[in-house]
Image (tube, rainbow, N blue to C red):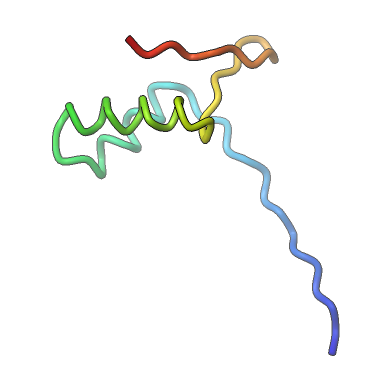
Length: 60
C-alpha cells in the first residue's frame, strides 16, 4: 500500500470586508454576522494582519 502525502493548500488572504461579505452571505441577519465574525476572531481561526505583522482584533 502506498503512502500518500497530503498537499496543503495555501491559506486564503482575505480583506476584512471580504470576510464580512462571506459570513453575511450565509447568516440570517446582521446580528448573526457580527456574532460570527467576533467568534472567529476570539477563537483564533481568523487573524488580522497589518503590513506583515499579526495584530490583535478587539471586538467591542
